[in-house]
Each structure stands twice: as structure tokens, then as C-alpha cells.
Figure 1 (cartoon, helix red, strand yellow):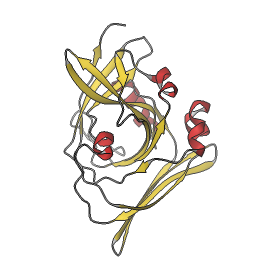
Figure 2: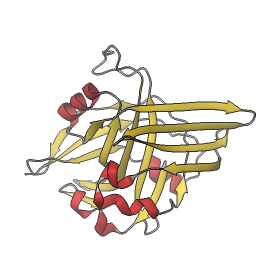
Figure 3: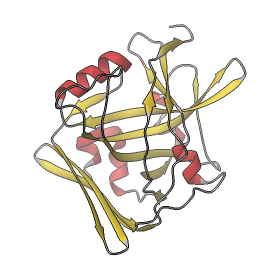
Length: 226
């Protein structure tokens, strides 16, 4: 997870109706996130050749007041997966902005270090995010930046018909691998459009490698009116 502090005005065109930008210590974040789906099921069923696959997404953080209860969630700007069928299903079920591109990943342990990388190909160019960390994870601190980034359990989507959709995500509290170094070689303009091209020259304020876990994504609902 590579996290960038940005001007809130940048994100307002992508803000779903009825939600507000969520901040941590006054900072508004955009995160570039890479992870690996393993043993994936859709409604309890494994789809052949679509069980284990990479995803890289660009996302930001929002909150929604649901009858007095504040729900903290994420909004995806774009989600990259390696197979077109994955993007079609995700768009149909959740209305999320999935696209398909050639992808690869790497995971390796050398001595006391753990290295993880994700790559995707756009316009003939490979883009890569890589990290090296200590191989033993540690507990996440309470009220920390890492907790803010990882503990958003709702997804909100700005739908074309003018309403907002909501879905829940469940996972246990993750641990962190202490970071040693990272490398980000990404053409943000080609991958995410001119609006986010400025990230090309912006250094992340933090980079995390998390443990990962089983995760459940629930079916969504409409919130508010159109």
C-alpha cells in the first residue's frame, strides 16, 4: 500500500453521493494497492481459471452517515485485474471500475527479508510496485496511520444513474511487515488518466506491507435517492 497525501479538491469529482471525504490527522489520502486473490469464490463457487489472480487498485477514503452511524469506506478510481472475465463480473455485481491488463507478481524470502512485487502492462510498458520488508509481521498500533488505511470496511461506488451503491467487506485486523525499502515505477497518466498524472512526481508519505487474510465481500445495496 503506497499512500499519497493529496488536495481534497482532486477527489471531489469521484466522490459518491451521500459520502464525505475521510481524513487522518488532516490528511486526505490516495492509495496505490497491490494484492493477490487466492482461493477466490463467487457466491461460494470457484470459477475455473479465476481462482488465484492479482489486483492493483487506486483508491481513496470516505465516510457515510447511516442514520447516525458513521461507516468508513473506500472508493476505487480504477481496479486492474489480469483477465477480462473478472472485470466483467465485478462490473456487473458491484459496478466497480475494473479493467483487464496483463499482470504478474513475485514473492520471495531471502534470509530475514520478504520481497513482494506487482506489475501490469499498459500501452506496451510494464508498471511495477515492489517492497522489501522484514519477514516477521508485527501488530498494528491503535489509532495509527496504518489502522486508518486498512480499517475501512465499506465500499462506495458512484453509479452512472446518479445513485450510490454500498457493500460491506469483512476481514480480521491485519499485521504489518516492517518496511525496509520500496520501488514505484508507474506511469500514472497512462494507467489512471491525466487527472491523476500528478502522482508521477509525488512521493508517498508512507508505504505498508500487510499480512493479508481471508476476506468476504458482501452483496451491495443502493443508498439514498438518485
